[in-house]
Length: 108
Length: 124
Image (cartoon, rainbow over all chains, first blue to last red; front, side, top):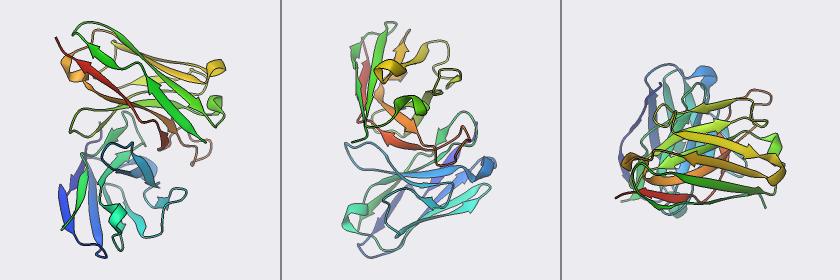
């Protein structure tokens, strides 16, 4: 099983600032099949990024993903008020599908 | 509108059974593989099970293997999860999710549509 470790656990930033979130895998993620999701309280997860770096339909270009192998990054170039949420990575290259524990981006 | 709506959650005693349903609308259900994902209170997401479009391929997390059964009825645009021998650790919000086809014919993909979830509480 691939274990995904996200860091930091919490990121305290102000609107307009840049957010950089990390997701590290315990072994190489097949075909860079790594996704990022955003989850707000009381809501279902929303797909942001797939294939490590491709934006899902309707996702603003301030969200970008990068990385390969075992190290992946989600970057939010300029935080908007609606971006404060929990972000979770998922690998879907192998079974079982696994998720990271999440990074909370909170308002400073 | 593309939509998934879960139902069937509730309070159940340890060792008992419960069945969940997920009704799909707004897309061609039998084109897509479907999955169940759960989230314990205050915790992260945990993948539970997945089923291919024609039920020909079914997979489970080790934590539920032998206790949970996933199934689907394409004629009814519905996904199901039968949960037997429930334990306290199964307490969670259960989401059904659609597996995206962004990678074409590859059977692997992220989850692009999620329901709002149905809560299962296992307690005596």
